[in-house]
Length: 320
Image (cartoon, rainbow, N blue to C red; front, top):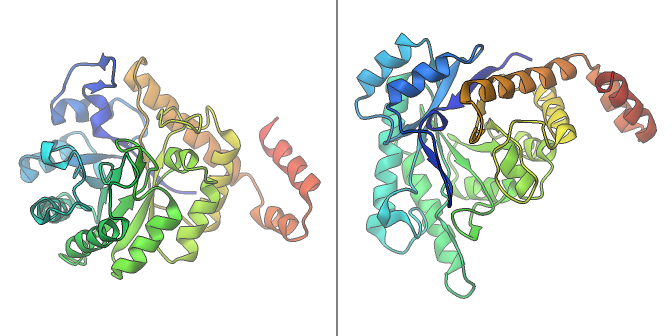
C-alpha cells in the first residue's frame, strides 16, 4: 500500500479539555516547524480560517518546511453564533455564514494545491428531546452543503461524522446517515471523512464503514486515532483496537486506497513529536502486516466460511 501521511496542525498548538490546558499556543508556522520534526510526515490538514490568514504566505511557509496539504478543514462550529449549530439551524443568516466559510475554504484549498475540504458539523445536533424539528434540520443541512459543494466542482467537500460532542447527539452520527445526506444533496464532489475513532464510537466496524463508502461509489478520506469506544480520546492508533485497525487496512488495500492518512491523535500528556512518531510507526506497522497477507487467500476463506482457518491465518501474520 502506498499512502501519504499527514497531521492535523492544530495538535501542535495549545489544547484544552473541560478541566486542563495543555501546551502553549503557537503560530501556524511554529506548528509546521514542529510537524517537520516527525520523520516520514508528508503534509498537514490545516484549519480555515484560524490557521490561514493569507493563503499566499501559508503556501510559502508550507513549501519552506516541505509539507503538502492533505485537506483544508473548514471550521463551521467554533464561532459564538455557531454554538447551537451552523448548517442546520433555522436562522438563515447563520447558515449563510457557514456556506461562506465553506466556499472560502474551497478557494483556499485550490490555492494551496489540494482538492479536499473537510468539515465536521459538531454543533449541529441536539441535547434534549422535543426541542428540534428533525426534518427541517436535515433539509437545512442538505441545502447548506449543496450550496457549498456547487460553488466549484474541482474541489471535493468531505463530511465528517461523529455521534456526540459538542452536542449530546450530532445529526451526522454515523457513516450510513452521512451517505444518505450526500445522496440527498445529489452532487458528485462530496465524500466522507472517515475518522476511525469516530467510527468506533458510533458502534461501527471501521472496515464495514469503509465498504459502505466504497459500495456507494463515494470518495473517502481517512483520519487515524483510537479510543475505548465510549469517548473520542484520540489515542495513538491500534493501542486499543488492534483488530479493528488491521481489518480496516485490509479493506483499504482491497479497494486500492492510495490517499492521505491524517493523524487526528491528541498528544496531551505526551511529548508531541515522539507521540506522532509512534502514531506513524503504528500505522506503518499495520500497513506492513497487511502487505504481507495474501488477500486472495483471506477472502477465499471468507467465501468458504472458514472461520477457524481465518483465525489461524491472522495469528500467523500478526502474533509472531
